[in-house]
Amino acid sequence: MSSNPYAVQSTEYMSSPMTGDVESTRRKYLSHEASVKSIGTLYYLGGFFGLLAGVMYAGMSITAAAGGMQGPQLGEREQTVFAMMMGIASVVAFAISSVQLWTAYGLRRLKPYSRISGSVIAGIGLLGFPLGTLICGYFLYLLLSAKGEFVFSQQYKDVIQQTPHIKYKTSIIVRILVGILLFFLLLGVIGIVISIVGGRR
Image (cartoon, rainbow, N blue to C red; front, side):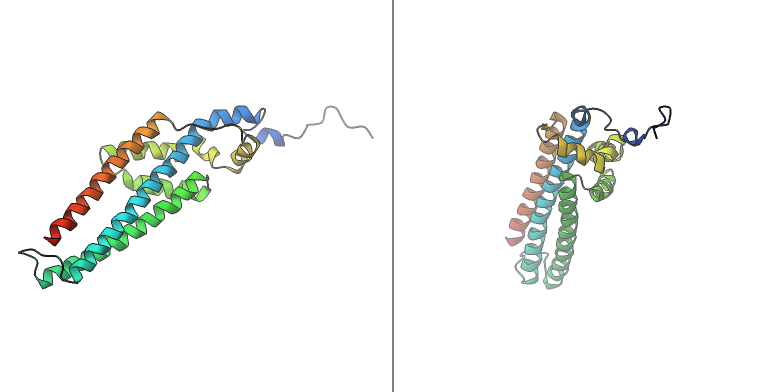
């Protein structure tokens, strides 16, 4: 029995944005993919420095609890309160850093869960007006736009597997953001170190 030449053919291939050349699809979304993965790099940096801050807060808490924070206005009660505050700050820093590192891992590998957690972190970052608002607003665009949705899809992962020879380069915008983030993180670390040294005098 011959097939009907007028029958409607399967349109399964039409349901995917990958219709046609997979290389052209990869190149079309390559810049967006690179930018999303660069967010993961930024979150890795934030998580790393957050861990350092947590360690420093913990050290300050231990020092204060042992009575090592010297100062004319730091009596035993004040040092106890300060030790508790630094202990809480340390726990919070470790918790936030852990979430950032977990999200960064997912973003670098385009895991769907990281699109949600990354958006939450970026949403909180909007409160850092004006610089944080601009940067995190851009992050939200990268993660929540239609291109962002496709980049995290299984279809795009299939495209990546079929085009391992196509590499991406970090955009200049992301490089600038990394530099700004490193600058402010370095200022924060210096401030913490100065506070520790000053507290021991």
